[in-house]
Amino acid sequence: MAQPDSGRAAFVRWAKQAAVPLKSLTLEAGQADLAPLRAIVGNATLVALSEGVHAGAEPLEFRNRVFRYLVEHLGFTAIAIESGLTESRTVYDYVRTGEGDLGAVLDQGITWTFDNLPENAALVRWMRSYNADPKHTRKLNFYGFDVPGSPGNPFANRPLRTALDESLRYLGGVDAEVARRYHQRLDSLLPFVHLDPRSMDVAQYAKLSQVDRDRLTAAIGELISLVERREARYLAAGSRADYQWAYRNLLGARAADLWLREMPLGWEPSKGMTFFGEATEIRDRMQADNVGWIMEQEGPGGKVLIFASRYHISGAPVKTAFSAPTGSAVAGTYLRPRFGDRLVTVGNLIGQGRFGCTGFEGPVDPNGPASIDAIAGEVGLPLYLLDLRRAPAGVQTWLDREHEMGGGAGKFMLHLKRAFDVYFYLGTVRPACPK
Image (cartoon, rainbow, N blue to C red; front, side, top):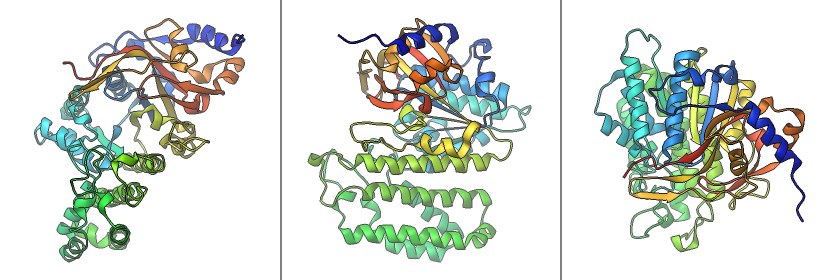
């Protein structure tokens, strides 16, 4: 007979006393119930907020509401979401200038099909309205911090070659001869910078030989080196901002290429995504590096909210079916040592519900009885925040054990105390796109 878990019982007792109930998720709601965020965030300049499942309405609504509070009360200056950095320049420019059609901006500026989520449209509209107010002299910035091209998602609007296309376009404006030379080297390969597991009847990376793979990788590496050493020349020919984005795009192109290189020669869909674990670690490292660049762009007074899957935000390695036995190194494992106490990580736990958009809808996976999501539900509140750093010593010991995160977009194991400083609990989620 299994023995009762005294640590679990102690955690639930403490959480019932320490949980901060929240009243609303809507962006327009009053903000009095969010006041505890001031103490939770403290002097942090980077808040990493997560969602337990993609395409659930409530995590996105909560993000929007939290970002507004952080901007209006704590001086935050930017948000960065789990979306391609290269593509996000379109949204970055829109929220600053208002130029362009919002639908087209979302279509070209937000990846992974997240452009279809109405909560993302609401976020961008609010940021544009904030920036249009002349009283706000410091304008808000929008970034993506993911690898460009939505690697592995064939439904995204812009392909894996996006970062290379944008890099060559930039070079065409500052160094036409170099652009010509690299078009000669890359144009025959660019259609193959693509992955579509649904069919092999299209040009894609799996059809490249080792020689062609190496040609592509070499060209990207040499192009990065060239743009580095010609920085002064290109700054004289264009703006500093354009150079910085172009250089970051090239690094994104390299990350996309490295992601694809994990695919074995001769791969085909019937063999499954066996390379996914290693490829995902490449993606997570790039995410962390992009966050570092974004913090640099925001400058000494900058404060940034980043938003992504709880998998990526975790400050501890995550054990999944495709990870190494010690777990996968995710973006948060790089951010924690880089930013220290300037970073606050917020996990999202979910009780039940459904998620979906763009023609897909499905149920949240049922929580196992030992999962931290199920345990969080025992607190008895439908929506709340809990600062794990304030737990008493005995509860801290229990938190430092390996725990299952259930529901959401799949189950995995992690050390909860190392993964998140805080969590917010949602008893129920609904699809982000109503039918």
